[in-house]
Every structure is written in structure tokens, then in C-alpha cells.
Image (cartoon, rainbow over all chains, first blue to last red; front, side, top):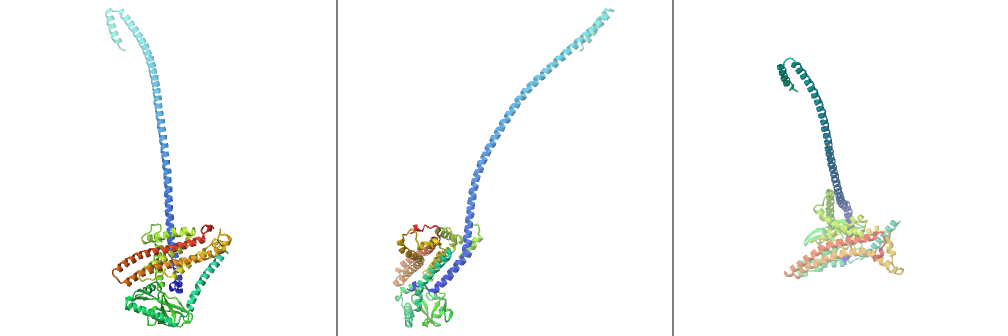
Length: 164
Length: 364
């Protein structure tokens, strides 16, 4: 059967052509294709890994943020509470102090008034005394001369004594 | 030391294969066909051709099928449209001779001291029977092979360039169409069967797949050559796989041949020959599988077309045409399947030869 007997010429050409095709394709086709595929696969894998990592980081960041916010809130609350307490205390203290101060001022004013009063009373007393004396002296002095004159004088004196 | 032995062993195996095929071809050269026989064959051929032209009733379907399947020194696209191909002959006394096959178109199919004998397949025989001539002609098959090589190189170098141009981008157009097949071969055929060191064999196996595929499909076109259905072509491919396997095989593989693990000593008498025969059976099966599948497909298709000419009936022709169309689709599928199987089995043979760990005893 001629179909089953290989033709040496065809074997020769087959070897030459096929090996040439293998070498040409290996150098100019398969190498860039396989490298390109591998590079792309690596890139895709890298991108996926990065996404995974970023996701984990985001979750971490989120929980960190929540923790931070909670902490900040706690701090704020504490500060507000402290401030309020401080303010309350200050107000209370100030009130007390003011009351004490006012008392003190009132007290001192009273004291002053009292002393002033006493001074004034004593001064008035002295003045009244001297005035009475003077009037008495003058009355006595005029009585001795004229009765009418004496009375005029007393009236005059009395009107002038209305001063002070 | 190890590689030296391996090389020696491979050379011995290849030499043995050559020796097996040697006597057949030598015999062919030495078998001097008498001139009368040659004349007789040519006359018969003439008569058949004459009959064919004269009356279609004498249509010889077997002749037609063999003519389409066999190699030829000219490319006949359709009846009468013929592309003559260069004939290249080498003989010790005349050296290299190159001339067009159109020169044989004469009364006796004779030119420059050579006969072109039409039989089951075309053979060029010197008129002087004592001369030994080697035929390296660019036959129809060689021309088709060169065409497929050009197609392969153009397609895949351009795809390679687009990979360099579109670096880091998604594949585009034809590149993405081919990428699917390349990835399938790489990830589902080569990687699981060859093992971790698959990248070294990937270029050979990819070329093997696409070479067989392109030639299978080219062979389905009307008027084209039946390249992958030619035993010389499938034999070359199988022998190349055989060489690749045995050049790269490790010590375990060779040790397993002469001392299969887990086999009792008396059984070795049977097992060793079985193992050695298995070594040669693998490429042989590769060769026969591809050859037989493609040739059978062509024969079936041509038989169906032949039926149209035998029945010569308007009632039967459409039915047969439909059936031929259906079979043509099946042949397209077979074209892919055979390319895939050849590559898959080559990968498995390579994989089993370079396997590192020696648990080969489970495999049998």
C-alpha cells in the first residue's frame, strides 16, 4: 500500500519546515505571547492582592476611626462635665464670696455710719452747747439793759439759730 | 554521566527506528520493476483517464479517492486547473536536478530520463533502472505545508507583536480569539500533564497543536492537500515527540524501563519486553491515530461525493450533499480533536518521562 509507505522526500521537507516553524514561532511568537500572558496574570493577581489589602486596611481604618470618635466623644463629654462643674463651683463660690463681701461692706458701712453719727451728734451737741452758751451770754448781756431790746434780740437770735 | 547515557540511549532508539524502516525503503529501491510493468501501469492509467473523459459511467471511485488522498507532483485545484510544482531530484551521478513537473505532460510521462508513474501514488523512477534517485520534490503536500508554515508564522508573529504593543492591556480582536486557544493548551493540556517544568516544552507543544490544526483545516478545503493524513508527516511529528521525550527523560524513566518497580522477578522476563515495546508503541500510536483519522475522514467525504457521480440522480444527490455537509462539520470537529489529542498525548509522554518522584508502580 502506497498510503502506508512514508515518502523520504516528504519526511525531509516536513522535518525542515516543521523545525523551522518551531524555532521561528518559539522566538518571535510564543516568547512574547507567553511572557505577555504571564505579565498580565501577575498584574491582575497583584491588583487583586492590593484590593484585598486595601479592603483590610479600610476595615482597620474604619474601626480605628470609630474608636477615635468614641474616644473623642468621651473626652468631650468629660471636658464639658468638668467645665460645667467648674463653672458651677465658681459661681457658687463667687456667690458666697460676694455675699460675704457685701455683708462685710454693709457691716463696715454701718460702722462708718455709726461713728459718723456719733461724731455728728457729739459735734452738734458741742455746737448746741456753745450756741446756747453764746445765746445765754448775749441774752444775759442785753437783759441787763432793755427789756424790749432783749426780746428782739432773742427773736433775732432764735431765727439765726435755725441754721445748721 | 547521566546525560551522556541518556543521549546514548536516545541515539540508539532512533537508530533502531531507522533500521526498522530502513529495509522497507531499501527494498523498494532495489526492486527493479521491469520496464513492461511500468509501461503497463501507465497504459492502464491512460485507459482509466480516457474512460473517465469518454464516459462517466466508467467512473472509478477508488481511483478518484486515492488520487485525492495521495501526494502529487502537481497541484490540481479542479479538473484541468493544475499548478505544476518543482521536481527536485538528487542522484549520485547527476547531482541535483530541478525542473517543472509540467515537463511530464507528454505521451509517455517521461522527461530527461525519468518516468512519472501514476499508481496509487505518484512515483518518479529513472528510465535507467540501475540508477538510484532521491526525490526531494516540492510536491502538493510540501507546498501545502509551506503554505501552512507561512500562515502560522504570519498569524502568530503578529499576535506576538500585539502582545508587546498592548502590554498590560486587555487583548483585542484576533489576539483574544487565539488567546483562548493558547490558554486552553497551556492551562488544560500542557500544565497538568507535563508538570512544573512545563514552560520548557510549551513552545514545541503549542507549535505542534497549531501546525496540526491548521493543516487539518487546510486539508478540508476543496482541492487542497491531505497533509496530516500522510503517514510521512505524522511519522515525523511522532518521531519528534519521541526524541523530545527521550532527550529530556530522567533516570527514573530509564530505570523503570529495565526494572519496573513492584514487579516480581520472574515476571520481568515478560515485563521488560512489554515496557520496551511500549516505548515504541507510543509514537507509533500517535502516528497511526492522526494519519488514520484524517485519511478516513477524507475517504468518507470523497466516497459520499463519489456516490453522487455513481447514482447520477437528482433525487439522491441533495440527500448525499446534506449528509456530506454534516460529515464536513464532523470533520472540522475531528480537525480540532486530533490536534488536541496529539498535543495532549505528547504532553503526557513528556510528563511521564520527566516526572521526579518515582511512584510509577501505581500507573500500570
